[in-house]
Image (cartoon, rainbow over all chains, first blue to last red; front, side, top):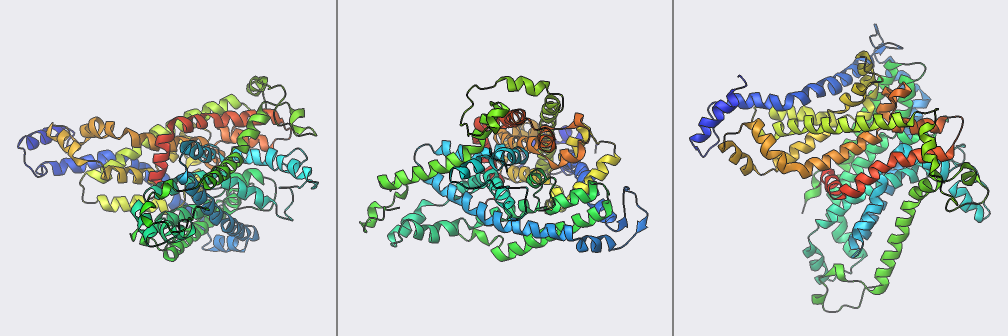
Length: 320
Length: 293
């Protein structure tokens, strides 16, 4: 299996002009080629994905503070610690609240925008760009705008200025968990950032709906508007909707950037990843508990994903 | 939607798209125009604040536009000594470009191998790759950090770039794409005596530039905007990326609004250009990543 086989074999084989694939010597060389193409990726995947995952599992069963080569096996203690830690379990609740707001809101907004844009006859590209443009912003940049200008708790913030015109007192949007105005800040931020992205997915799906369906519905007497939307558009978008909701749930679970930046020094509104960040890389550097938390979170995401697949019907979407 | 005219003959209804009274159309454009304005507000705020003075931003009365645009904010930002913003820009540019080039190279090769080169264990290996998609990357940041720090890669480009390259998702997308690539082209190349390697570089890649461009754009954007991993790896300010620098402004004691917003504007500008010029590929690429049903 030397490097020269590729040329040496391919040539005579194809010269025979056999209509089937040139078989004889190429088997060996195709195995060699397979590894030539895939091994850089597979080695990297093993080292930087599989090893960390395995290491994380291993660490989660040890007492590992300030060290990554621990010696004291503690079984499931780290897991119990994390599950009893009200901060961590509270963060799971935080996530749930967040997902309950953000997933339907983004779904509805991005679908609504896609429907509007899809109906445009002029300036379609322009409006598509406008809604898609926020995707260019990072969560950090958006958090900065939201925290320091839009929802700044002081007088000169945009929201407080507008409310002030109507005689409403300044609202401390982020500095106070009660009432929890910070949810409004976080949800609007994420809506703005991600709606355009999902709108593109819906636009692509809308354009794939065969126009004959609408014609047939019109002949059957369906009124354009709600009826065609309910009985044609929505069912046709089912596969995309399922994918979008799945992506939204996973993205919500992984929320980190905007929470970390908006609520850096507060104790409220911490999603799981922020909590894990402080557990593992904060002052106590507890890699054991951090790893256990990561495993719990991963399992939770898997369960939600699978449950959702069962509930919304994975793969049942292509019943055309 | 007042266009529900009494049932004319169904025959002249088929072009639904062109239906719509003047009122319906006006309503459509008004509502979409309002939505568009709302979406543009944050961009307006960045531009306004970046070109204002601090007293203008924090003043009693809301100023819609800076009376005297302060372009000097730009030079002031790069001479500011508290955060080396120029350095962080450079870091981000280098890191995002390396991640893009590396991901394209490594993942496209693997995707092609998995899609097109016959090997009896190829499917098993593909499932192994798919399996990594089940574990959310953000959750593995603790063990990844442990690994990278034990390699001594903290605060280095290696640490910022290499662990990010091996994206199961990109590999998956490339495999799906290559499965749909016309086989005849490659077979013609084989008849001409090219091996897999030659056919790949001379035939497959040049004919797939659109797809490569789409993946490149998406990878570049996520590389430029990444926050968690650079935050974990960039302990020393000399290794900060733009996002970490921006984040540090938010926790700083002294707040220079005009500088912070100038920095934000600069951090967004490259991507806004990418968005405006590469729209076509980007939209197509996003639609393709959308796991179409």
